[in-house]
Amino acid sequence: MTKLRELLKLVSSVHWRQLMATAFVVGLVLLTSSIDNANLKPSTKAYLNNMIERGETGRPVTTRQWKAENERLEGQPAKRVKRIANESADAVEEMAEIYPGNAKSVLPGMSNDTLEKDD
Image (cartoon, rainbow, N blue to C red; front, side, top):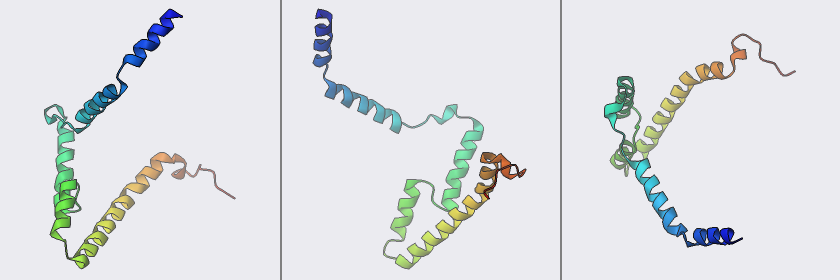
């Protein structure tokens, strides 16, 4: 019984708020720290660079690109609506390119007609 009291006393003496705050700060630092790209594979670097380049010529990819585009079109609602429509069309087109391959890999019965059908 005394060991239980000692354990409860130890647990109650821990400053949980300070412990949680420290854990939060450590987690925040780990999540927001930048990635050391020296250790990345060349294919990963090429993919990331390609993604960033596409954002500059097509739809924005990064938050900075979105904000810059919004600031540039501020006070021009017609151009802003046109931009949104174009970007939405591009996104739907990309999804249409990706969807068939994803559907076939998720539902292999579609390609060989072995998938059960509803009556």
